[in-house]
Length: 121
Image (cartoon, rainbow, N blue to C red; front, side, top):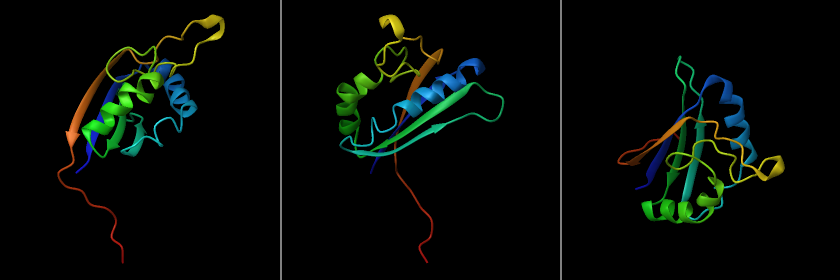
């Protein structure tokens, strides 16, 4: 079964728009990767400053291959585990990278042991 990687990002309220724009700007950066299955950026709605970046992969090896290749480039300049809302590898005017939108990051890993979807009647 698949594996899930959830990057838990601490994002101050004043940086939320920046983080969301950066993820929108890199749309398509992971979708063509071997073993990639799903991506979601989850915005908090209940008084927390924690965003969740949910990705699902066919295997741990596929995730590691992406991280060591295209994933490394996508998270260039990020602080924390597996990226923290960085400039996604794009330098700002003057050649400097913008500071990360997140102030911290933690990577959670899970194996999918059971799943279900909508009924197909």
